[in-house]
Image: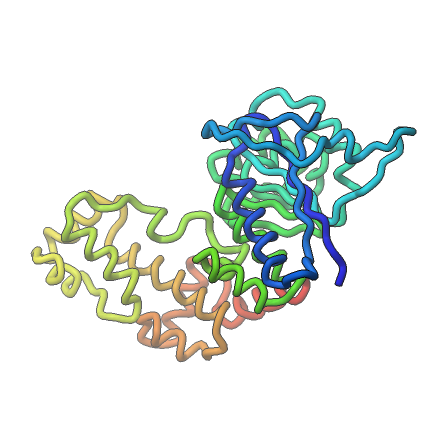
Length: 331
């Protein structure tokens, strides 16, 4: 089995989870395979010195980037299979030497990956020009403004464009790493690693950075928070305003007003987003037909689900599944 070197770049101010999340995924995959480890994970700072993360944790790299990529005669050696550039507050500092290193050496990697605002460093090195990319939602506008040659997509949790992959903030790096492990070693290995880490096997890359729950405020009052949780856990149930108001022990009119005041959206819009999100997961992860999915998600008919999909995603459920499965086979 080919052993793939994964080189993780370190610098002062790096976000620790951007480093350790993907690192745990790749090393976990090697543990699953036992002595024939499919990955060799190494960390490296520019000159091999320890770095201090944005949370104050000190990380000691395995090697120096300059030593790793230059022999005594100055020629480049040891290009990694996967070069991973994490993000963090430190990406906003001056990194001229690191950017120059990336510009010179990153193109030699067979796979180039960024997590969170690590995309800013790749962009500064000119490695994302002409490509579609993403980053942490709070910095997508900045990336697009500073680098107009990049097609910045603020919605998905990760984006693949050829051999370059960029992910959204922090934990999205775990999702991207799991997707790469699945691509390299198969679903069973990725699933084993995900179970060990107690995370989803792989949130699809085109899943929005904000779930329905994260996209709105959490209600202050306990009855309304319980209703939010109930909607999430029972998308196929009776989620009419009357039924939800009864669960909250409020009149329908009072419930609708209170829900919007505390969450920033109406009950109907919240229910619609939860149902579309649940339907997407079923279309992505099961072989259930559109009619089965529509029933499981509380739509009265497949046509009702189709209308909701077209409104939210610009495509019908069957076409969404076809595109999603097609994207998996091409990666």
